[in-house]
Length: 224
Length: 224
DNA sequence: GTTATAAAACCGACCAGTTGGTTTGTAACG
DNA sequence: CGTTACAAACCAACTGGTCGGTTTTATAAC
Image 1 (cartoon, rainbow over the protein chains, first blue to last red):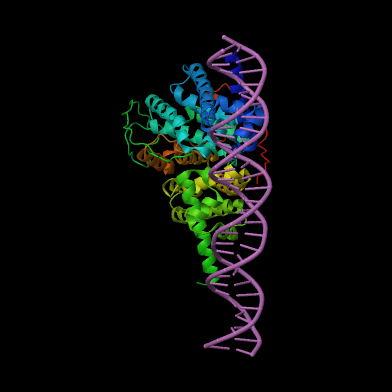
Image 2 (tube, chains in turn purple, red, orange, blue):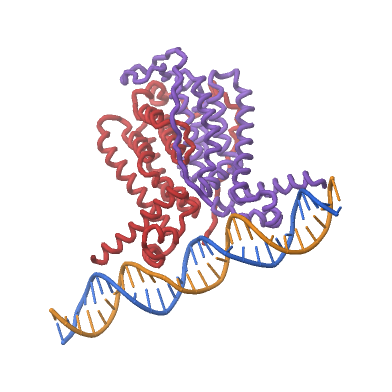
C-alpha cells in the first residue's frame, strides 16, 4: 500500500477508535494509550498521525462537524421549497439527527470541552453563522431562535443523560418544532415590547430589523 | 473553634476550591491535589472530609441542586397566583438564573459526568418530577415542555460557550418564554378534543422514518 | 481547675498505576 | 538511500488513594 493511503488508514483507525472509546467509556477515558490499544496501532503510530492529544480532539471535532454540516446541507436542499424557514428546519432536523446517530458527535464535543474548553470556539463559530441565517429568513426571529433553542435543549439534555423524556415524547416534540404551521399563530412583528395581553394572533408581514451583534463570552483560559 | 464548625469550614473550603478550579481551568483539571492546593488544606485534610473523589463530585452536585431548588421554590411561591403554570415559570426562571450565577452549577455537572456519568442520575431524578408537575398543570403539555426545553437549550448553550447570542438577546428570549400570553394562541388540546398526539404531520417537512429508537446509553462503566 | 484520655480534624510523605509525550529502532516505500 | 510510517521501550509528571503521625477539641475524673 502506498504511503498516503497507509497514513490515511491509520488516521481513520485512530479517530474511529477515539469515537468508540468516548461513546463506550465516557469522555474521561479518552487517552492516547486507549486510542492506541483500541485502534491496533502502537502509541508511536498514533503520535505520528497526531502530534498532540489536542490534535486528536480537534480532528474529532472537525470530522463530526463536517458530518453534521453535510446532513444539514442535504436536508436544507430537500426542504428549501416546502418551507419559508429552511435554515431553521435544517438546524432543528440536524439537532434531532445528532441524538440518534452514534452519540459520537456530541460526545466528541464533550470530550473536547473536558480537555480544553477553548476548542468550543470551533463549533461556536459555525453556530454564529447559522443563527444569523435563521434570523434573516424569519418573520419573527426571536420565535425562530426559541424553536432552535428548544431543539438544542432536547439534544443536550438527552446527551447528558439528563433527559426525563421518552424517545417517543422527544420525537413528538421535534415533530412539532419542525411544523411551521403550529407556530405561525404567535409570530410577532419586529416590534420589540408588544402589548403583553392579547396581540398574540397578530401576524405582521414585515421583514425584520437586523439586530446588532455584540461581544463574545470572551472565555480565555489556557491549558496544557 | 468547635469541631462541627471546623469541619464544616473545611468542607466548604474544599467545595469552593473545586468550583473555582472547574470554572477556571475546566472540568478535566479537577483533581484532589488541585483542590488541596486551592483550598489551602492538605490533601489528607481533603480526604478526611471526602473519602473519595466521587464524594466530592456528589457533594458539589448536591450543593448546586439545593441552591437552585431553593431558588425555584421561592420563585414558585411568588408567582403561584399570577400564572396558571407556576411550575413551568419557576423552571424557566431557574434555568435563567443558572446562567448568571457563577457558572459553577452546571460546570459541576460537567465535571461529574466526565468522571462518573452515573452521577447524572441525581439531577435527572429531580427533573423527572419537575417535568411531571409541568405537564400536569398545562393545558398543552407538549408546548410547556418545549418552552422548558428552549430555556434549557439557552442555558446549556451559554454554559458550554456555545452560545452565539448576546446577553440582551438571551434575556429577551427568556422574557418571552416566561410570558404566558405569548403562547396561549397556539395551545393545543383541551379545546375541541383533537387527538393531538399524532396528526402533527399536517405540514411536517421532516421525511423521517420515525423508526424504532434504540435503547439508552446503557453506560455501565466504572472508574478508579 | 487541672489532668488524663479519647476522639475528631488534619498533615504530608508515600504508593502503584496512568498520563501525555519522547526516544530509539526498523521496515517499507519511493 | 533518504524519507515516511510505524513499533516498542521509556520517562517525568501526575493520578486517586493510603498510612502513620501530629494537633486540636471534647469528655470526664479528680
